[in-house]
Image 1 (cartoon, rainbow, N blue to C red):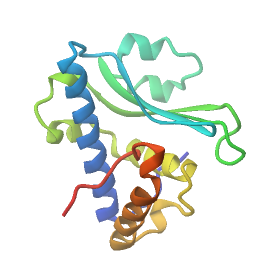
Image 2 (image 1 turned 135 degrees about the vertical axis):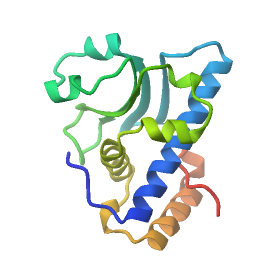
Image 3 (image 1 turned 135 degrees about the horizontal axis):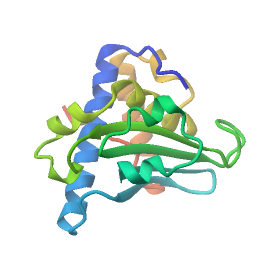
Image 4 (image 1 turned 30 degrees about the vertical axis):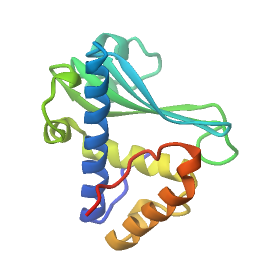
Amino acid sequence: MQAPEIEPRVAALVIDSLAADLFRFAKGFQRQGRRSEFTVKVADDESLTAAYLFRPRSQVLELDGLPESFRGQVRPFNVLGMIRDRGPEGVAKGRVVLDLLAGQSKPFASLRSPVEMRAALYPGSVLTFVNHLLRCRGLEKDISEFGYDEFRAELRRRETENRAQGPAPFLPPRP
């Protein structure tokens, strides 16, 4: 899936929000004594499983079927976005899609701020993954079709409607 052309403020909102979430996840696992290998599920129901996989290079390179372009971007420590769509729409039923969202030379749990996490992100992959995830979770149009104010309003509306279904893939910071 190709990274969509997105209004710059929408792209910044998506990237900044994901950086903050990933940083918070990594710090939570660090407090549990884990530094480089952990999984955070952001959706797990009858139609969709989605997760952020924090993995060292050796584990990523063990995965079968990765294109060489993907393998060439793998760093000592990585964050992968994984989606398994079990529904009738989106990717083929049961198919797993992986996006390489971030990579760096030290464990993500060692970062000191969301700004450092943002610097490790691959923006095109993040936008592709989040767009795909939101579409699988029922967003009716591509995020490239939203203006900034419309996108924030849609996120707030979905957040309110979906509270009972668990956490959203990311939540925008409050103004």
